[in-house]
Structures are given as C-alpha cells and as structure tokens.
Length: 579
Ligand SMILES: Nc1ncnc2c1ncn2[C@@H]1O[C@H](COP(=O)(O)OP(=O)(O)OP(=O)(O)O)[C@@H](O)[C@H]1O
Ligand SMILES: CC(=O)C(=O)O
Ligand SMILES: [K+]
Ligand SMILES: [Mg+2]
Image (cartoon, rainbow, N blue to C red; front, side, top):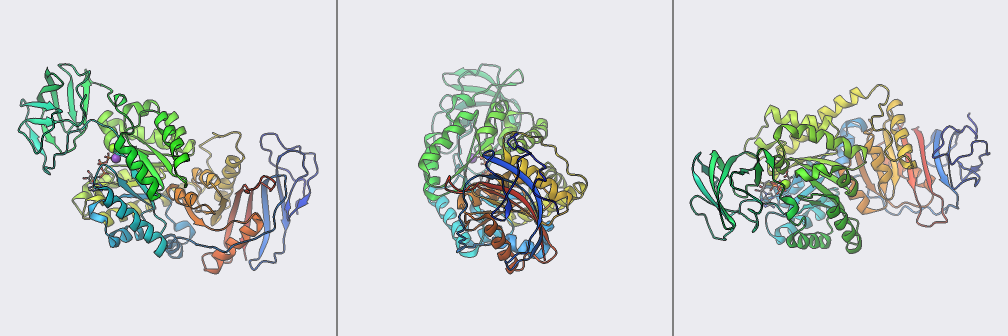
C-alpha cells in the first residue's frame, strides 16, 4: 500500500512536497501549509456502508477548514426516465452523448407530441419567438414543465429571440413568388396589407441606407439576386439578375463588388420586442435564452448582467453565430457567453456556403477549448420537413457534426412544422449513436489531450483532464461528479471521455443547464457538506435501483465548495470498484 507522502501532483506550485501529510476525515488531508494542497495516495478501506468498496485511490485537493458531519439525503430525484431506460437497455457505454434540441412549432405542440419527443431523446425544447403568440409559447413551456414534473423527464426550455435583421415582411401569403430574370421590382418600406405585384416590402425603415446604384440584393443567401438600378427616396428600384423564389420572411443581404455591406451593426441586437420576450422568459423560468444576430460580446454581457439581477434562477445565455461580424469577434463572444449556437441558416446569408463547414469546425473546436457548449443548427435534416427519410448527404452532415464532438444538434422546421418530427429526431439519435461508437473505438488507445490547458490556474480543469484520461485508460464504466454550479461536470464533458458523466447537483438550474453538455446526465440530489457521505449515498441509491452492479468500476470526481467559508473545499478523483 502506498503511503501518505506519495505526492504525485502539484497544482500551481502551492504544495510543499516535503511537508508531512496527515489523515483527516478518512481521506488524506494536509496540514495547513497552504490554502490548497493536492495529494495522491492509496489506502485500503473497509466500508461500513452497504456498498463495499475495496480499493480507493484518490487524487485530491483540499482546502483547510472544518467539515460538518451532517448527512442529509431527503430527496433523490434519480435519473430522468429517458436516461434510466437507455442505461437499462444499453449499459453505460451505450448511453447517447450528443444532446438533441427540437424546435417546437404547430406540428408538435400537443402534450402527446411533446412527450413523444421527450421519449425520443429531446434534451432541450427551443421556442423561436419570431413565430406565434405569447399565449402559445406560454402553453408549450408549461406543458414541458408539467411533463418534467409529473413524468420524470428532464427537458430544458430555450427561447430564441427574434433579433434584428433585414428581411421581407411576411404578409401572410403562404406561397413563394417567382422572380424572372430581367424583371423590375420595387423595394419599399411602405406598409401595406396583402401583396402587390412586383413589390417587395422590407421590414426595416432604413434598409436602403448606404446602398448605391449597382449594388446587389441577395435573397436568402442565393435564392434570387437583384441589382439596384435606381434610388427613389428610401426605396429602391431593382432588376432581377438571377431568377429565383422569394419566400415569405426571406432574408436580404446587400453586396458591392462581391463584398458584403455590413448593415447588422446599425440594428439593435435586442429590440423592444426581444426585451419583452426576455421578460416573458424570466417569468416563465426558461433555462436558456438564445440571442439572435449578435455582432459583439457587449450585448451578451449586457443580457447576462441583466439576468443576474432580474432572474431568481440562473438563466444561461447562448450567443447565436449568424453574422459575418460575429465571426470576426468570435473569441470574445464565446468567452462572454454561456454557450454558442452555430445558426447556419442565417450565417449562410452572409458568408459563402462553401465556407460554412470550416467555420463550423473552427467554432466547435474553440467552444470546446473555452469550455462552452456548442449547438450545430439548421438544415441538418431539411428534406424531412417534407419527406419521411433524410438524404444521404444530410445523414453525412449530422455524422460530421458528431465526429467534431459538437455538444448538441438541433432540429428546426423538421420538428416545428414537418409531419415527420419524431422520425427526424430518431434519425439524429441513431446517426449520432453510430458515430459516437466509432469515436469510442478511436479513443480506445492512449488518451489524446488535444485541448491543452486553457485555464492554467484552475485546479478543476487539471483534475478533470486527469480524470478523463484515467477513465479512458482504465476503461472505467462511468464517471460520477459532484458539482454545485456544474463547472467540474462541464470540464469533464469538455474532454469527451469514453464513459458517461453522471453529474449530481443540488441546484436545479445547474441540472437544467447541464442538459446541453455532451455526455452529461444531470441528477438533482441534496448534497450534504460531508463529501464521503454524498459519494457513498449516491452510489448506494443508484445501486439500489439496479443501475450499477458488482464488478462495475466508476470514477468519482468531486468539486465541492460548501456554502460556508469555514468548511472544507474538497476536489478529488477516486476510483471505486463495486463489489
Ligand atoms: N412557434 C412556431 N409557430 C409557427 N411556426 C413555427 C414556429 N416555430 C417555427 N416555425 C416554423 O418552422 C420554421 C423553422 O423554424 P426555425 O425557427 O428553426 O427557423 P427560422 O425562422 O429560420 O429561425 P431563425 O428565425 O431563428 O433564424 C420557421 O420558418 C417557421 O415556419
Ligand atoms: C437557427 C437560426 O437562427 C439560423 O440558422 O439562422
Ligand atoms: K430567432
Ligand atoms: Mg437565424
């Protein structure tokens, strides 16, 4: 048996290795030579708890203070029913890692349909505030919360702001209009009901500001193209130079000599309608707000500050990358946000379509490096809005996003308006599972540390990097992490380890935020200040319902900062064999 003093790791040079290490509260602790120390040791333990653990190997970091012995576990909400079913059916390594977001619309807003999506693996329900009424959105949010509460699902709610963008006014006519090459059209901001021949109504008063004769107007990133032939006050007379379909709410982009005229910066990122939708989101207790058409990090920081004062629960802010300017400011936006959505639909209006795959790859990698969840969105299975099977190219696109280790994939019209929403969700399920297995095979060898260290002063990052490496190299069955704010769970997820990560938290906002993290199954429990008791109790509970069995080996990571400053901060890695 290795003895105390087997120090192997130091973090930030805080540990004086020659100092003797004492035994404290059943773990290797440290005299108060520094506020934080780390230790590695090995001991044999005879457990009095029902679960028998033979060997306990620990790597830990502990801060000085006193621990309370109080162990209260009145509440155990266990696993959500979908993860539980998956675990029973497929075992730990068969659990799906990539999270799935469904846009809710008229095709899937009944209680029955929402439940079918939850059963089918929806982790996050997205509501696009561009469409439908306040009452409709409220009804959907309440149905989802009811399903979670009464039936044990764990589906979080995201609202997506309308944002400001120049587009054609949706005047209610459902069909598209065809523009023929050479035809002359009038673009105006004059408000009128219904449609007028050869007239396009733009939504934004100053849409033509800075636009010159000879510039091009492109619909929906290439659906049709016009050349400005005359300026008439604020309106424009244009000739169609590339025929195509003009869809309701089509997006307009403006080009000069092949270069985009950046007009988003003139528009407010959050309009008064967006602010009122945000107030609504706060009052309904949504989990995520996705901000459309952001151009820089200021808007993100502003909303986060606002939410921290106005919302009693923690609401996460996702920045949608869908403008050219946002790509220029990518790093600061990722840093300011709680996560990113790669909104490929509108992004494709501003950047050439052939650069989208590279941009997607760059964003997914950067988000992982900076430990922010990333959602790949739009047109993943677009043909399924109409057809019951996807194209081969769509399946290849979904697989590529999974191979890139995106945290989540999103359905838009496929679930919101299409008749095959559940099928589309099941295509995402099976396709991601297949690619995850292939990733798993590739990771069987030595753990690849492709991330480096982005947070050199953070003990949690070091612990989780080492934990993920151990979990892969030792082929462990599962990782259990104890986390109040989700940081350690997110750092573990960031490493994309082979075993699933079960994140135990006592904070329901943390639980819901973790629904978007790759490979994490969040559970809500009461956490006492006695970490050892938390660990054995939670393993015991999961064992009682038959979800872990003798012979399983799990890695337990704790990142436990008690409420009181006089209590012990305890961060550790332990390997536990269940016997
Ligand atoms: N709540 C809703 N009510 C009615 N239709 C909806 C609703 N949500 C989505 N849709 C329909 O589904 C389509 C796809 O939805 P989605 O919100 O992903 O697309 P989008 O409008 O292009 O997104 P965004 O505006 O964020 O770029 C929309 O064009 C709209 O027709
Ligand atoms: C999702 C979204 O907003 C887009 O793709 O544009
Ligand atoms: K939107
Ligand atoms: Mg968009």
